[in-house]
Image (cartoon, rainbow, N blue to C red; front, side):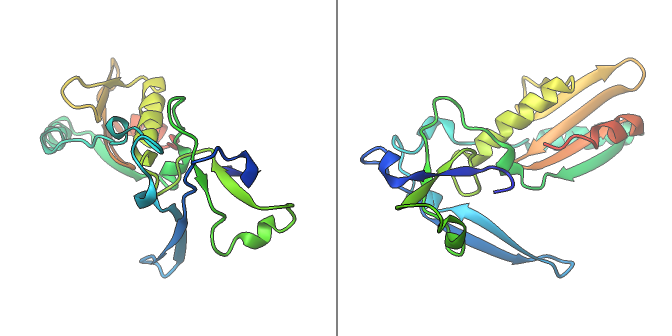
Length: 198
C-alpha cells in the first residue's frame, strides 16, 4: 500500500476471460532476529500470451568474466568497491505499455482493509510486484534508466556492465545482478552514488 503497488477495482471491471492471480506470503527471519513478510503473486499461475510475452520476461545478469575484470581493475587502480542490495527493488519497476494488465485477489490477512467497499473487489497491479514473471525485467529496465541519468553507458559486451569516464577520477563501473549492484570507483564517486536508491 505504501508503494502504491495496486488499486482496488470492482470485479465487474475485470475483462472477461482474465485470470485473477492469487498471492502468498514469504516469511523470513533475518540474521539480526527481525522477521520479514513479503507478499508475492503466484506467478506460476501466469500464462504466456495472457499475462506476459514469453520473449520479454527475463532479466540479464552480469557474467563472470566481467566480474573478474572489474576486480582486477579495482586492485590495479586502487579504487574502492561498494555492493548495494536494493530494498524493495521489484516494487520500483514499471510495466511497459505493451504488458497486459494484471489483477490479483485481495491477499489473505488484508481483507479487513477493503471491507468498506461495496461488492466484490480485486486488486489491479500498478507495478510488477514480487512473483510476477515481469518483475525482474521491469526492475532492470528502471535501473538501467537511472544509471543512464547518472551518466553511465552500457557495455556492448555485457548488458549488465555500465561505466563512465571522468577526467578527475577516471573510470567508474557498475555491475548489476538482479537487485544487487557492485560499484567500483574513486571513493568520492562512491559516496555520491550511495544516494542512488534504485
